[in-house]
Length: 170
Length: 105
Image (tube, rainbow over all chains, first blue to last red; front, side, top):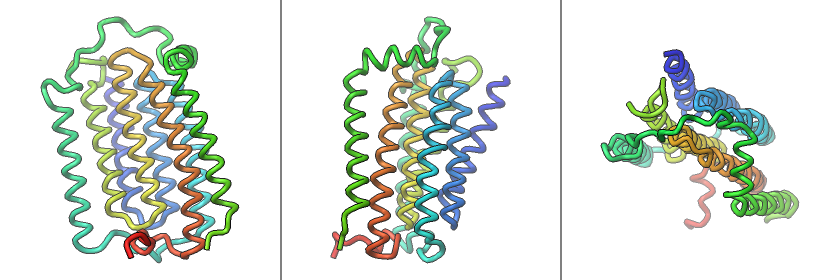
């Protein structure tokens, strides 16, 4: 009961903030509302026994990535000059395609044989589920190669960002 | 519903679907490149929620590991993408994606 209440609270705030991200005029407000979405999702992650991921969500996502966003928004200082929404028929088709995507996802989720109806694993939840130790054990054994590849991805991203920032483009 | 005591898995999936759709609307309808980027972050987070819900439902930590990978990709994407946006703004003095569709003409 308490869990359902907390879920409803976090989910409602997250959806409200997400709508604000998409429809607010000022990009600074958009970024701050996105931080609201991320924090509420962190609360939902804790409901899902993913404490470590929730902590990373707050520290890395809301703390680092969104600061980067805000930094760029304030550095560029663009507000009001670009039109809010795409004009005319493109707007209509944008909403239409989003609706189609939503209906498709709902159809998949609500299907009787769909994954949402899959029976939960019978085994009881391990005591250390979601702890850094449990995640690390899986991350550095089963998912070792993908982990190493992500480190290369990050290296490429750093090099790319530096090159983009330093080179003169005409 | 089956699944976790308290909140059924279906609700998490519905929330993820709603957040993802809002992100899709943002990408398709907004014109500012920065807000389109934020909408992409929104979609990545909806996917993360789906991963974690299934991870809890199936009582396997692998879903949480995948959420990490999604976060890493989001960080890399934000670093490179924002650098690209800065360069575009330096050259064009606009962020309207309709005005910077140079491949078109």
